Structures are given as C-alpha cells and as structure tokens.
View 1: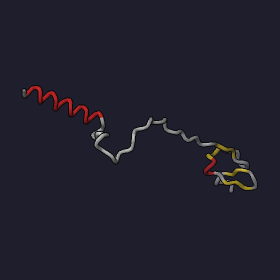
View 2: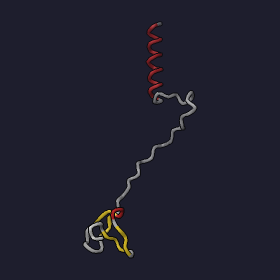
View 3: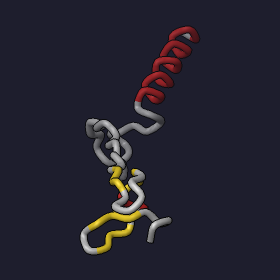
View 4: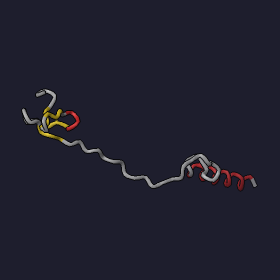
Length: 74
C-alpha cells in the first residue's frame, strides 16, 4: 500500500515538472503555448565612407546630401 502511494507521488511530481510547475487546466492566467520561432538575427549593414573609404555600420554613419560619412570625416 505504501509502495503504491510512493509510486503515485513520484508520477504526480513528474507530471507537475513536465508542465513547468503549472498545470494548464488549473492555471487560468497562463497563456496558451505557441511554437517557438527561431530568434531573429539582426544584420548590421556596412557602408563605405564617401571620404576616407572605411566601412562602418550604417547606424554609426552620418548622411550628408545622400552620401554616407563616418564620424571622423564629418
């Protein structure tokens, strides 16, 4: 009898852990699970400076009359 209770307790803990500590039927505040998408890889676009010719990330460039300049050349 004690062995049956111990086995049921172990199975109960395993089920509890499988659901991440929350049982979806009892937890009304949790959002339904969705498929996880791959993390988006943000590409950094490199642009050549119009004056010195060095390649720098676009976010660090200054645009003057449609041409990209690095911070050192501005």
